Structures are given as structure tokens and as C-alpha cells.
Length: 199
Length: 199
Image (cartoon, rainbow over all chains, first blue to last red; front, side, top):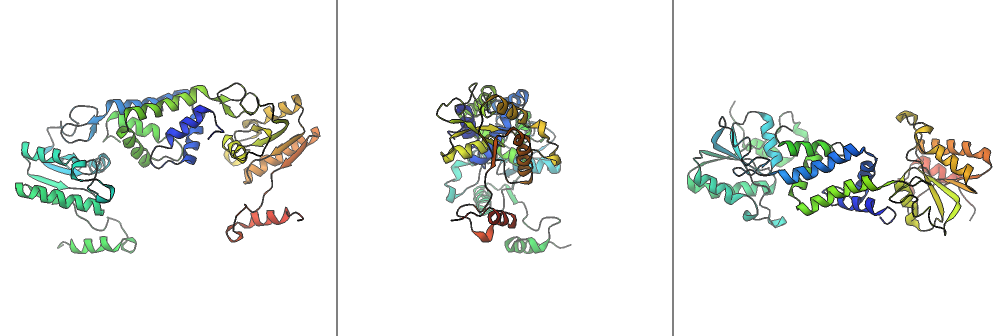
């Protein structure tokens, strides 16, 4: 990178710190950015600063928001006695896109993963427990992913909540709608079989 | 994207304008950026602004530099009578990394591509012609890529310069060093055969 001017090397270095961006992609991005209009470059730099400066955790559900309490938690029309526990903000957005879930959320910001050194105290679990003690919750829907870590986390939370008597449910595993059985892994097929329902 | 706060949606939108970054990757990057330290976020935003504000074209060779004349063009120890014509700044850097080329460069910033609507006037060709008229040039080495567009551009430049009597050469096509013949395409193999030399 000594073959570029200091500013270019620096930009390539900063961009290559981002996840999934290697030195080659960072170079391509850097030259693209230099070729963009000043207006667009400023819009990008401002968006980066602005998101970092003004976005923080919702005090209730720990999603990312620019208000103290996020719009979902602040919405009186939603069912505040049902909490869906998700791994991250993207998963919350995925459920919101369905437009059918009327409860609220709790964002863990991670999963329990002994391999990655992430324990129960590294995710927003004690905050969930606090909500269950404080609020009148009827059901906790665990919607962590169906990876090994997602399942481990679901089991952990389930054991944690069971003694309180609050109903704990887990989203169903199975064949995705429109999925071709041929292309689906065996574990998912077995899950779909185990979870079969009478029609 | 309505499921995120305005700042997050805006950051995702700006990031997804970059080449090779779709909405999903932009989302991943945005949440990563929000999770970074303020110091690192500022370093990234500053690097973006700084590169755009202070990097411009070298008045001689049109590489990107923060000085009027780039360090290569300003270097008296280099052979200013030999110009290597490259497509872009990355290709210049690739030749500089060899440490063996002692001439100077001319960066075209593109190739002639009728398919993409890029004609001879869209790349820095007239600036090359001007250099050849003004300076005492002995050789022009055409180092555009061996794609169809790179070859077209090489042919075009060669025809343009030939009448001036300046020596025009083209970097060799052939089998990459360490390359396994089995994995190399037929056109490259034929080029390597055509370009064979007595040993």
C-alpha cells in the first residue's frame, strides 16, 4: 500500500477493518469513493457519524433506536404481555416485515456460544429476566436461530424462565414454504417430521 | 427498511450505493459500525472525507496523488522517456510492487468499451497524446489488461502512436509463472504458444 498516497492507504486500511471486506475490496471501494461526487461522499461520511452518534439501545427491548423507548415498545396498540426474544435487530426487522406479530421484542445482541467465548452474561439476558419480574408477561416466544448456538440459547432461556410459570414457546423448525425437499438438509427434514401437525 | 430508525435506514442506504454491497451486506456493515467505538467510527468517516478532499489526479500521469505531481513523476532517477500505459491506479501499484520498472506511467482511468458506452474520449487518451508531443518519449509500453476491452484499447493506442515513430510495445500474454497448464484457458495457452521464445 506504499504505492498509494497516504490518504488512499489510510482509507483502504479503515475500510478493510470492516467485516467481510478484504484489502482488495477495500481498494476497489476506496477508488470508487474518490471518484464519487463530493456531495455523495459527504452523505456517506455523515450517515456513518450520524448513526453512531444518535442510535442507541431502547431502554425496554434493547433494539437500536434514536428515541429513549423504541416505536414498538412505545406503541400502546401492541400486546405488551408477549415478548419475542431475538438474536439481533435484523431478526426483529424480519419479523416486523411479516406485519403479523403484535407483541413486543427483546433483543439479545448475540447467542450463547462456548466456542466463541460468549456466555449468558455477554448477551442481554439479565435484562430479559428483569423485564419478566417487573412487567406482567404472559408468554415468551424464543425466536433465536436454529443453529447449534441458537438452540443452546433457546434451551438456556427456557430453563431460566420455566420456574416463573410464564409460558415459554419456541418458533417452529421445518421445511421453508416453497422449499424443495431435495435441497433441504436431513436435520431440518427430521425436525419437520417431528413437528408434524394433523391437517 | 422502515423497521429501523431513520439514521440506520439512511446508513444502510448510503452503504448499499457502494459497488458490490447489496442491502443485506449494507445492513451487516451498518450494525457493525454502530457497534464500533466512536474513535474508530470517526477514523472511518474522516478517512472517507480526507481521501476525497485531498486526493486528485497527478498533472503528468493522472494517477491519484495528494501532490501536484506524483512522487513517481517527480522522481529524477526514473526514466522519463519510457511511459507505461495502465488502465487504473491499482494496475500501476501492481507494477510498482515488482520494484523493477524504472520508467513512468500514464493512467487511462478506463478502457475503450463499446458495450459499456466508453469511447476513446472517455479515457485519458488525449492527455497521453499531448505528453508524447511535448516530452521526449522513446517507448510507450501498453499494459492494459488482456480482456477484450484491454486488447481493443491497446490496438487503438498502438494505431494512434505508430505514425509518430515512437516505439510501441505490449506486455506479453502467456501462462502465469507457477500456473498449472491444466487450469489455464485455451486462449491464454494459444497466446503463450504464439509468443514462444528461443531458450
